[in-house]
Structures are given as structure tokens and as C-alpha cells.
Image (cartoon, rainbow, N blue to C red; front, side, top):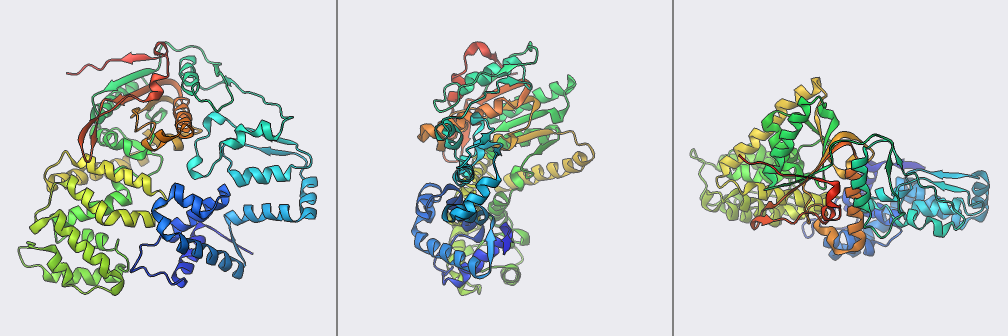
Length: 543
């Protein structure tokens, strides 16, 4: 049989959708990438499509019958083409062991000892596979740190490691509590940070290294800009003290938390690298929404026009070229626009694109009535709600994270009343970043910016953990259940334990919000759980 990689899987699902009779003129159906994610999740968590959509993709619940139909067709197509995706390799193997005793007996005798690393990150089907393989001899050894189980969002099941002694009552538990990385002061904070979790194997880390004269610092600041200024200034001081830039990391709960920081580092000429590889303003969804703003500011911007209309169903490169020529021909010498809608509706588009083209015409009239653009923040919100939100749901598996980024873009834009000032700032940021990139290639020394999830397993001399406020870290979504809060606390523990020598925990008192202006922020509940004597409270002097 053929093994399908993720790209093959996406293409096969797209083929199945095309053959299923779903009409893209009537509904914005999820793309192959998103469907592949949904199908994979159901296999790895051993849950139904209904359960999964209700929890992770509630906006697709109205399409549940079509999605289930596509899923069934996809399974039949794989069988007809003698193909398996990566999830099948696990699911079909487990099913074979459960349904064919003689096969199970052969492999259970063959593998007398089963060792599993990073067990805290296993999902339901992986744990079932291990238990089935070891059901005769029960010689299983698993290694993992329950305090670092932070991947439930991609299917990992924390209960696997926690309930291991219940499934294997004869198991011995060995706790590795000696830490070779961090100074005692940082480990004291780490121990205090994880202590409130109810569901855990209690551990007390102790250091092999000597004590540091510097306690971890807690730093309260006015807002995100002052936080960015503090971090940048402290980085320069550390550099003067002989600490290499690549030994410094700034960690955050979500990618959009680093917006002000990226701006400040760029302004000061401090080279930085982002673990995801893409800087905030260079991300596809940010540039997509910015294209609408660029176009209403300059109706002759061909690049912005094409990027904007190619987001609509049924419009590819060729259609975009034809529509651009028609648009350009409709402009007079002044390029002034009285009504976007009148001009756009007079252009010829295919039946597949008609409905969304009318929506585009309406939206452009809304964000720039009579050709006069509204304030940038209002335009961003309108574009996202009227057009881009549906596009993002159908095209991105991490829709919620991208939506948070777009909310942050709207908040950032509140400081600009004039559209050209806003666009000039975006261009300036991108240019500064582009100029910094060649220097970084020659000189690999750069500060590390990373989400906590992506920093797992890494270590640095100095770590800054930023935006430690309730609603940011822990995230708003996690405040609803104890299980979610405990996972956020484990994430905070992972952040703290990345630091070897110095640790700075920062929280702004105010935050710019797209809809309400400045909002007061409460310090993270995780900070309040750490005894004050373990931290140095830094007071920032303001000139």
C-alpha cells in the first residue's frame, strides 16, 4: 500500500470534496487541510466527529452531515486506492491486534519489554496501542514529566501518565528530582508555581548548582510598550555584562503578545529570531487583512487588489489578472472613488464568486464610504467580521490563534487615526526587519522570541516571561475549567524552568483593546501563588 504524507492527504480530501456535490457558492466549506486535522484528531483521541466539532470547531456544526459524508467518502477512497495516511498506521495496527488474536499473540511474545519516552505527550490511541502490545508480559517502562504535559490542544492525554499506576498496580514510581540546569532560586519559584495543581505526582526539585545572589524578579509596568522598553533595556545591560544575545529568551503564551516587543527590538537595532520563523506583521493573515486597508488608501495598488480578491471563492491568478485590468480601466485620471460598490458590481465575475463579490463591494463601501477611509482599527474589525473570519475558519487549522492576532492588529491600529500613517508604520516595521535579516545571517547572535510551547526542551541563561496577566497568561479560554487552568499552570512551570541563571516575570497594568481602548489588567493568578520572599520586586523608575 501507499503511505500518504500530509500534502497527499490534503489533495485526496480536496478531490473527495469536489466529487461529493458540495456547492461552494452556497457554503464556505472547510479546506482539505482543516478536514485532515479534524479527521486526524478523531483517530488520535478516539472520539466521534460530533464530539470533536462541538468542542474544537463549533462553527462547523451546521455542516456536520456533509463533513461526516466527506469522512466516509475519504475512507472509501483510501481503500479503493490502496492508501493509508499516518493515522491509519496506528489505528489499523491497533485494530488488527484487537481483532486477530494470533497476530496479537505473535507480537506480544516478540516484544518482551516496552520502553516509552516523553510519555506525558502520548494520546489515547498511542496509550491503547502500548497497553495492548504489553498485555501479556506487562513489562512497560515509561519516562515522562507530568508537570510538562502541555499539548492537550493537539490531542495529548494527560490522564495517560497520571493513571499509569492504576493501570499497572505493580508499577514502581521513580522520581527524578535532582536538577542540573537551574540555580536554587529559580527552582524554588518553579516548585511554588506547580504546587497548587491537584492532579500531579508531587515532586520537589533540588539544585546541583550553587546559589545565585540574584532572585528571580517580578516587574509591574504601565502597559505593553513600557514592558517592551524594559525588556529591551535589560537585554542591552545583559549584553554589556557579557551575556550573549542567543543566551537570552523572551517567552509568551501566544504569538500576538510579542507585537510591541518586536517593534521595540527593531527600533533599537537588537537582532532577534522567532521560533516560528515568521514575524508578526509578515504573517499571511495579517497581510491579507492589511491588503484591504492598502487598497482603499490607494485604489491603484495592484498587489493589494489581487491579494484581496484571491481570498474570495472561485478567483485564482488568471481571474485576478482579468479583474485587475477591468478595475484599472474603470479609474479616471484622479483615481477618486465615489462608490466602491457601483464600480465593482459593474464588473464581470463568475457565478461561483458572485455572492462574495457583492459582499466585498458592500464591505469596501462600509470601511471607506465615498472613498474616504475610516480609522484603521475600525476598518480592520469590519473586514474581519464581514469577510475574513469565514475565510480563516475554512482555511486555517489554528483559526482561534489567528483571530487573536487580528484582534491585536486592530488594538495596535487604535493609536493611528490616519490610514496613511498606519500603513507607513507597517511598511517601516517590515523594512527594518528585512534590513536586520541579512545581518543576522552573517552574525547568528540574536535574542530568542518564542511561545512557551515551542521553547519546551530548551534552556537559556536569562529568560523573560511577559504578559503575565489573567486573560493573557493564563489565557481567557482556559479560565472556564480546573483542568484547563492546571494545564496553563504546567505551561507557566515549563516557562520558568527554561532559565538557568536569571528570570524576569513581567506584567503590564494596562492593555490596549480593539473595542474598548485601554483595559485594566490583573496580575496573573500564577504570580500570586508564589511566596513574595522568593521574588525580588523591581520598581521601574520613570523619567
